[in-house]
Amino acid sequence: FFEKIVAAPADPILGLTEEFKNDPRTDKINLGVGIYKTNEGVTPILKCVKKAEEIILKEETTKSYLPIVGTPEYGKLVRELVFGADSEVIASDRARTTQAPGGTGALRVGADFLKQQNVTGKIWISDPTWANHFQVFGKAGLETAKYRYYDKNTRALDFEGMKADLKNAKAGDAVLLHACCHNPSGMDPNAAQWEELAKLVAELKLLPFFDFAYQGFGNGIEEDAFGIRTFLKYNKEVLVASSFSKNFGLYNERIGALTVVSADKETADRVFSQVKIAVRANISNPPAHGAKIVTTVLSNPELRAEWVAEVAEMRDRIKNMRELFVSKLNSLGCAVDFSFINTQYGMFSFSGLSPEQVATLKKDYGIYMVGNGRISVAGITTSNIDALCKAIYEVLQK
Ligand code: PLP
Ligand code: TYF
Image (cartoon, rainbow, N blue to C red; front, side, top):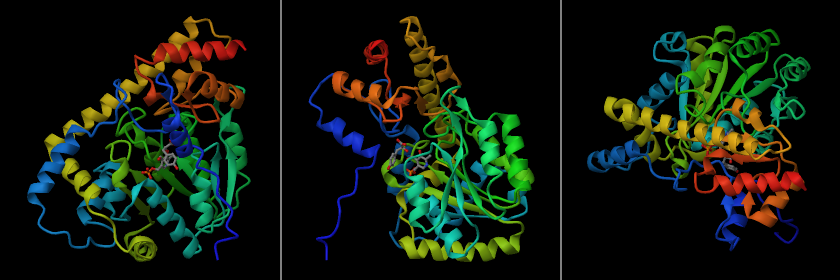
């Protein structure tokens, strides 16, 4: 049966982590995968998460199955985080949330629902995007298409190109949007552009599907929901895939959520019955631990305040490293002005380095970044930044 199986290529990002681990150099630097690290280079458990786990350990009385979609309390907290507690969407009770195994699981459940219920045509995905998007939607059986997003020459959002490509979509297609902190470019639409996009997508009759993997890493927890909330002014139907991997540091707990907004409450219930089928066919029902942590933190005012502060600390450290990175590169007198990096949001920086330069940095300096020149700014520390900037300066001289 298996003789004819051809080996698959490694994941372009996770494969890099393996290579890094096997590199014997002691001064190596990993700027590949998007995992938050402190200035000491570790990925700690958030304090609010540890405290929540202590409460859970003490109070938990059963390991019986959760409902297919997770608990109602979890769903409610997720919707409040995404839409705002006083939003019209919540007041009119037309959004439904299912727990999902990470943001990836949420994207997949959403994709399965769209495919199985024949909701949309193609799904339009930004070029570039997170390496897994085409696979998640493609393997669910949806046809995928690309829209322009980033202009390599101006090193900025290609807003005109984006709009022009979306105008080529057919009414009834879906469009995947990164709600904030676009991976890999770090370029997000500004407020006026979100408004324009929201109107355009409504006019074109496309279904917006938001990937919300970095809430809190851009401008703030509330601020980062701006794009989604703006879309809801013009679009009655929206999907949102939330991830708590980054903003709760719960990477290996696999905790996320899919929220589907319908035009009215009655439709929302019908839609949700089909979303449940998609969940059942994938995982039957979700694991409890990550959801309990998120629920405990968000529903306890003290822990929630601590979480908000810890997210701010992560966001600010990344922002500080980004600014220091730019100022050090520019003061070395690099051939390129790196100031554009300060216009990017979130964990990543699109450095503009070529695949050859990225390869040289790995081979000659033990510095690992994704082949498209993406740097995980969260991997930069005050201890490795000088070596990093010097290496980039030297590579640019070659
Ligand atoms: N979407 C984007 C844009 C991401 O960068 C990631 C990162 O892992 C995910 C989804 C998946 O998140 P999770 O680890 O929660 O599945
Ligand atoms: O883009 C990143 O680095 C993160 C982490 O298959 C990630 O989103 C990367 C690849 C992957 C799963 C997670």
